[in-house]
Length: 312
Image 1 (cartoon, rainbow, N blue to C red):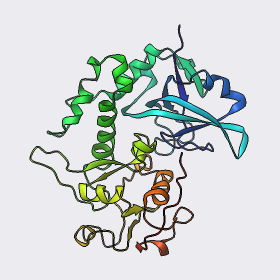
Image 2 (tube, one colour):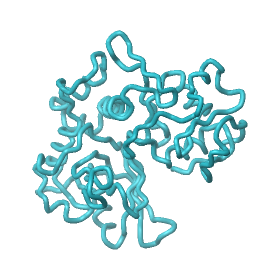
Image 3 (tube, rainbow, N blue to C red):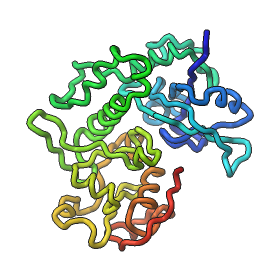
């Protein structure tokens, strides 16, 4: 068997410094050589149940996404550990259980294992396949890029931007936010039943942001515009932050009185604090808020200089 792909076991709750879609933390003594052998290769991400007794507290017991291995670097705070950076990270529409694949169970005995590209490719096909009978809203045009996944060539499946965009939009808009704007709570649909909200990246793809649900927000277009321009942001606890003389009054009136965002109840679908913090520090037009999430600092804040990003 030619091992030209790999599997990484990712734990939802653990002591490692993982950031979904950005980096994977691992002990060098156990896995450095194996991970270096996977540079520039396709890897499947598998969540075990270990770490909890249910899906909400532990893992989903299946393959949850794929990525390519990019750079590897030392943990500056721990010489015994290192980080792996992801490239073209994409989450699956569905969790794919091991039993539905041809991947041998022994491949999951260690956190990092090689696997054949053919086996990995088949898992990717299953993870991105959207069945027409799954209740797709009429008018969700980009879902067509997922429905025809089985007919796509191998290279297109794992690298095509349209497929990754469609997967990201479906995960964020349909599955996580049910078509509702995270900042206003408004859910509007067009004449075809399509939700009139965007799947917005908190950390832009152009700046290294991944297609991770936890790096996404469903936003109506006016709020998407304001968020991208740093006129509105979110605290780690989900409070909405705005800036003086920035947000148009008509738009600001759409925000809830208590300034609480409408975020998913499932923790794995809520924005990750690393992406929110990066947005506040790099894009939000105020002084740095990453060091605190105090309610006393929530509300309208003055426009200040932009600190540096914390995520490279």
